[in-house]
Every structure is written in structure tokens, then in C-alpha cells.
Image (cartoon, rainbow, N blue to C red):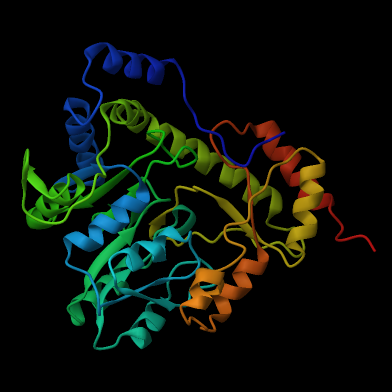
Length: 361
């Protein structure tokens, strides 16, 4: 089986974890501080705050900016549910704008149409590792005095006009095992705002600056030194991982670009796509996925049900019509692109898709 995703973990990560275990400092400690420094340097930001998950990174980013009850946050429904849930956690309301059909990211023009007096923030998602249209989105945020929080959970190392995502506003990254780099579980907030960084650090540690002195309501969302040790090793490998993903993506596109009924991923000329997922569009998506599975090729559908169509959000009263989002949810299919996929695997995948002749009656 060629899996759709596979964590790349080896002797370097094992050694790093063993060193932490032998040190006896396994909670938040010197490895976390070192990882934060290295990740800030990598993203070109002044601050990085390590947390327990990507969801925590989104949640704490919103809290650090004071987002709460009565506020609205414009975001995408075509994402993992944590994007919107993190807004609900604060008491604020997610407002869904539709996506650009080519990049699967928020359409800036539709963001404008979604702004109300209650809007406090915009949260674009750099879906699949392709950056959102950050110049336009940042201009909208500045024109309307709105907070900009980037859901970069799938976009480690992605760039817009030569600048890393997570550096345009406040960034939130995930280090879940199947992401482009992992810490087993974990997340990171990036920002150039010292005040936001300080608030995020306090909130992640029970609202405390000093042990047993609590300044605000906080949470236990810290990263361990064990996770940070893995992250430090993974970060050093990230550019090599990215190059391999981009290589595999190019081979897939070369093999599939002339396949009838298949639309390959779009990459804007001013963007660096890091291919967390290589996602095609095809009308008979489910039938093709079943055929590929029968041939030992893993696939993924990210995401088959948009957030605004999830049962819980229906209970909350969401009944939006988002045509591009809903069509994408019916047509997207992700193919294996991770660093352990070989050129031979790519040929097998391409040939399988090219030879597929549609659902059998």
C-alpha cells in the first residue's frame, strides 16, 4: 500500500528524545525555548510560542487578541473543523466566506462582502500548503481595522511573494504526525507583536507569568521538551522534506495534466506551495478513490463535508450556501505526495488514474 500520509521519524528523533529523557527535564523547558527560537527564525518572525496542538495555537491566538463573545471572525468552511471550533471556543461567531475554486483558499472579494459591524478578525486558511492571497487579505484587514490570524496548520514553509506564511499576521501551525513536520502532537503561534506573544505565553500556562501568581484565566496548553526535541530535528529536515514533496507534485502533475476529467492543483506564480496535500478535482471522486484503494494506493478526501454543513453547525443555525466550497467537497481527492513516495510510486499512481475509465455500471 502507498499510504496517503506517513510521518518521517528516524534515529535522529529517537536520540533527541532519549537525551531529554536522560536529562530529567521532560515538561516545558530548555528544548521548548530552543525550538521557539529556531521556528521564529525560520518563519522570519520575532516571536514563536510553542503550544500543545494546532487547535490550541488557533484558540490562543484568538484569545491573545481579545476575540470573544459578540465578535465575528471571517474564515473558510473548507477546512478541518478546528478552524471554526477555535472561534467558538472564545465565544465568538465564525462567519464563512466562500473560496477561490482554483486554490481552495478564501476569496478576498467575498471576505469584503462578509464584513459587518461585529467583525473583529479574518482567519484565512493556507489550505493544502498553498498560501492564501495575503496582500489582498491584509489590505482588507488594515482598511477595516481587523485582526489577521493565519491558519497555517498545513503550510510550514509556504511563502507568499517570498515571505513565509505566519508572518503577515498572527500565525498558527500544527505539528500533528501527518503534517509536513511533526512533534508527535503540538503547535506554534508566530507573531511580530510582543504584547500578543506575552499574552499567549501567559494564557498557555494557566494565566500565570510567575508560578502560583495568576493574572488571567488561562489553560494548560504547553509543549513538552520531548515534543520540542522532535520538532528541532524535524525543522532541520523540513526544507528537504518540502523539496521532495514539490518533486513528487511536479511528477504527478506531469503525469496527470492531460488526463481527461482531472484538474491538477493550481500554483499561483507568486506562491511557494509546500504540498501538504496534492489534491486533484474529479467529478467521479468516490469511484476513483475506491479503484485506487483496490490497487494499493491510499487516498484522502479533505474535506467531504464543509464545516457549515456539519451536524453541530446546523444545530447552531448555519444554513449558508457556499457554492464553490460545496462543489469542492464533492470533487477533491488527495493523492500520496509525502517524502517517502518514490518515483516508481508516482508512476503507478499516474498510470492508475490515467487508465481509470470511470464507474462501472
